[in-house]
Image (cartoon, rainbow, N blue to C red; front, side):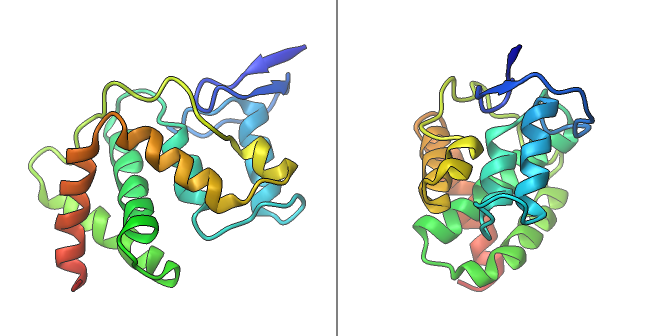
Length: 161
C-alpha cells in the first residue's frame, strides 16, 4: 500500500513507525530522512535539515512556526545571500534568538506550498541536494517573499553581515 506524506506530498510504501512531534512528515518519509542522516542512503547535505524541515511544516504550533522560519531563513541566507554554508548553524542559532526576541515569535506562514519540485525521495534517487533546497525555498518565496526577506534581513544584521 502507498501512503502520501502530508508534508512533501511524496508517495511512500506504507510504513508503521515513529514520527516527529511537530515536523509534519509521514512515518515512511521520516524513516527515509533518518536513513539519509545516518549515511545509509545518498543525499546527506549541510542544508538538508533546512530543506526537510521547511518542506514538512506540520500544523500550527509555536515549535512548527519557529522551525519553518529558521530553516527558511537559513536557506535564504546561504542560497541567496552568499553566506557560506559553513555558517548555516550560526545563522540557525541567530534565527532562534531573533524569534525569541519577538513578542509572539515567528508567525505561521499560511498558505503553505501545495506542491514541491523535488522531495527527499528525489535526492535519494540522485538529484543534487542543493537543487532540492532551492526548490523548497523558492516554493515558499513564491507565497511569502517579503516576510522571508524581512526575517532574513533581521537575522543577518545580527549576524554581522
